[in-house]
Amino acid sequence: MMRYPLAVFAAFLCTATVARAADKPKILVVNLQRLIDESEEGKRFIKKLQNEVADKKEAMKKEVMVLQERQRDLMKVESSNRTPKWYEDVRDLFERIAGIKAKEQYFIAKKNDDIARAVTQLVQGARTEARTIMSKRGAWMVLISRTGPLNINSEAGLKEEISQRRVLCAVPQIDITDEVLKAMNKWFRENRSESDKGGKGANK
Image 1: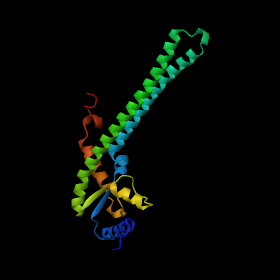
Image 2: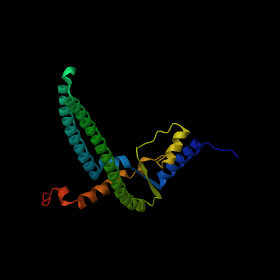
Image 3: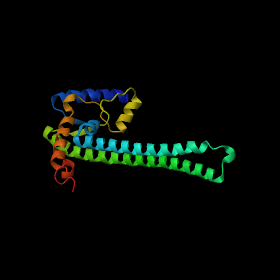
Image 4: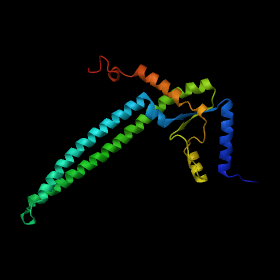
């Protein structure tokens, strides 16, 4: 039996999918990165995250600069004048600077977890809206494209994309990201809290 390479089969699959999609698409695509970058909820979260990271880095930078200045002063002491107290002070400064770096790593890890939770919430909201659109379109499924158009240069790369369940191919007519964004933004505007809206209860 002739065994066709996986790449040949995938190329046929892409061609067949595009041909059928031009008539009546059965597979719809949502670009996850655009949901994060362009949805009102996503943009609000990203801005909040950027501000928090900037403030934290600035505070840590100032703290380290003070300690480093103290370090420079201590290192000016002649070796013949370095007492046991001097060595204790130097050790303490090194430990404090290392502690700040450890705090920074902890902060970064926590923010990465916050990002993961926020993306999960966005995907859950997108799934609700996508199901409605999928039903209206009579589609079979909605796939998530995480990084936009794919660039597959080898059979190994193709296998990797398949194993990650990412989009193999799509035509513009079946990308419903705009519709999902519109529905999500409408829901967010109608349901966000008074404090987010800056209403009367914002400062209570």
